[in-house]
Image 1 (tube, rainbow, N blue to C red):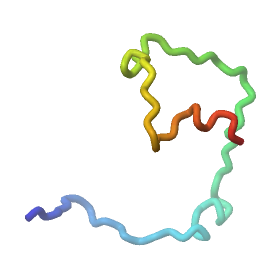
Image 2 (cartoon, one colour):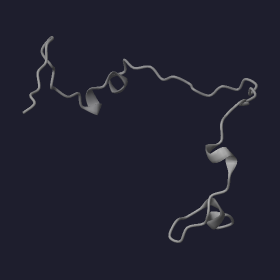
Image 3 (tube, rainbow, N blue to C red):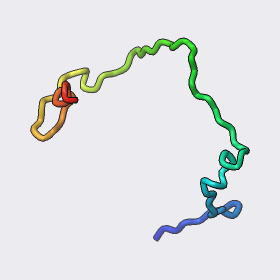
Length: 72
């Protein structure tokens, strides 16, 4: 039978209600995450393809990307 143990400071099992959060008390900070700088470039190299990129057979009961194309 396995047991659980903890070695360290006492665990605080209390909660902080949303109304007690610093933001709602006027002590919080709002951070602007919008960045208008130029976008970079993404690229990958030497990424292996599963099964060498071979197509997998269409199996009854399995949904494929082709089944969903054009359905909006």
